[in-house]
Amino acid sequence: MLTPFERMVAFRYLRARREEGLISIIAAFSFIGIALGVATLIVVLAVMNGVRGEMIRSIIGLDGHVSVYAASPGGIGDYENVVNAITAVPGVISAIPKIEGQVMAVNRGQAAGAMVDAYRYDDLGKKLLLERKIIGGSVESLRNGGVLIGSRLAERLGIHVGDPVTLISPEGRATVAGMVPRVKAYPVGGIFQIGMYAYDNALVVMPFQEAQVYFKLSGRRPAASVIEVMAARPGAAPEIARRIEDALGPGFRAYDWQSSNGHIFEAVIVQRNVMFLILMLIILVASFNIVSSLIMLVREKGRDIAILRTMGATRQSVMRIFIACGAAVGVLGTLGGVCLGLLIAFNTERIQHRLESLTGHPLFNPELYFLSHLPSKVDVSEVLMVAALALALSLLATIYPARRAASLDPVEGLRHE
Image (cartoon, rainbow, N blue to C red; front, side, top):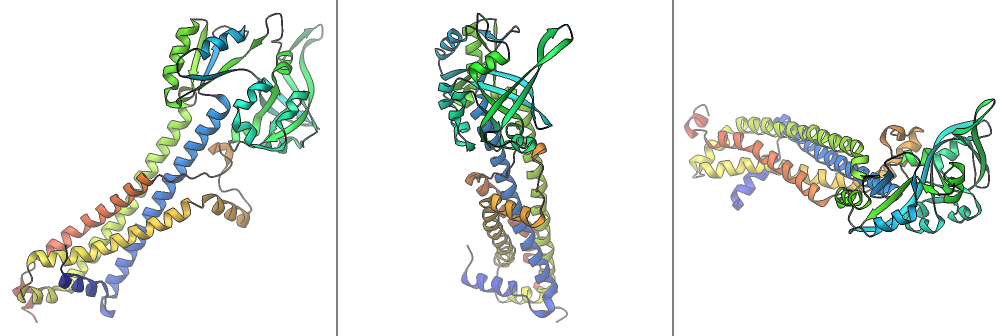
């Protein structure tokens, strides 16, 4: 703890006089460097957490925690009994049959590759993410044979609610003229915007029975392509996938959401760790500026230190004075960086929209980053960790100059005075 005398001297040293202007400039750069480093680190961690959370919500919200496929081609026949067997597995909340397939979506000469997902209408109540993301039309259109398409796919094809979209499947029928693809037009009854580029740009949601007919799964044994499973705990999905395989036998394969999308989340984690290390170097460089400013301050205050020592100030007292000078820069820089970082982290989307409106260009390509917006999620523990690391580095930077000031010999300091 500092005594009132030590606080007074440290405060006077922080107010550099005109002839000590260079010291104050270096201290100011140290303050700015620490503040910017802390703020940038908080923003990057918040954005990375937001991206990971948004991707998990989007993937789980549409694809479920576990996907069960038949081990042989032809889909899952007798899927009602399979659903009942999966539902009986401990930890499973629900199981939904789904049909999926690849098509070409065409409208007025415009074409785009798309992925079809088909659900029974009664099961759509379990797909809350899809219902909440409808921006035009309604889910009710699926009852009448309509389809739902992603917002970016609708923009690419120039489609609005009520317009028809033609779906072309490469798996057609053989004729004397060769293979003829299946072609059918469906009215667009709704447009959704999930916020994840892969879904908004290439997903078509169809009625289940229509998809069975379209993909030739409506024979004497109607089939489904996959069974989507929702678990009580998303983190337990790998264990539940193993239980489902044991319950269904060797004719089925179960894949959890972590293994199916592991490459995406690993890339996000690697980017997060690399950015953390790079931005910590900014704070480290700013801490070295504190070292240099304090060393110059010690040289400038050599006579003052000698006078303080002859007046009875101990080595520990002198050391605490200079530690307080450097720590003040570190503490103020850290506090300023935390406030700035939280201000930006809580307003990332507003800042993104503002910058995009000014420049007229998107800040990042959603094709590369999967998301069409910039989410942010502040973790209090990470903010405290960043602040603690910045304070620790700032405090460590003051030790050497403070020890050097405390070891100054009063006789040498006053010899030439």
